Length: 236
Image (cartoon, rainbow, N blue to C red):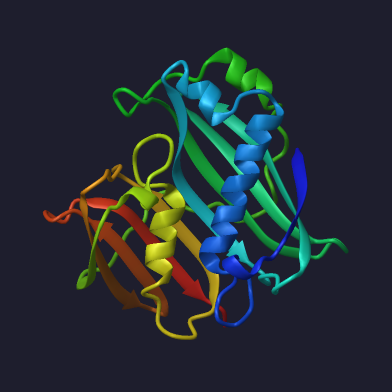
């Protein structure tokens, strides 16, 4: 397990003074990157051999988002490797041990020149000792959205959306999706799936619908091929 102490900064909080939904995802992603740096397998090291870990899905439970200025622990560990896929848990806790947010995620190991999955190099598996999966519900990695999606926004990918792999960073999709949630929608669960990689200059069509209390956000290209699908469940 890798763990570091973080603190909710002004730039990552929402209008209620809490670490934003996208801020939670950014924190988890940062924790993953710090872990990779710690074991000597950073994203930059992987790029030297044309490899990258790309996220395939998130399942995040928001128990209580920390407030402005609050210090907390962010932890992550790998719990499975299989073929081209790796699975990783995340945990945010108060300094006193209160569980704030936790998540499961699936990543695929890719050839950056083709964007296609490739078998995980043995040295990658050796770098991350497998630990037990966090005790949480298992859900489908696939998001099934109801019919009736309504176009809400169109956004053109600019340079600030990109990461070192040359496509839209996974946290940017979460930020765009969270921005079209109904006002005062208090997120309890977020499930997200990534299908296609968007690049500089691509137009992103943000579409939404609601069903049975859940709010769905799908980001597509002009032909409605999905880049990203998400389901937000509210707190009771």
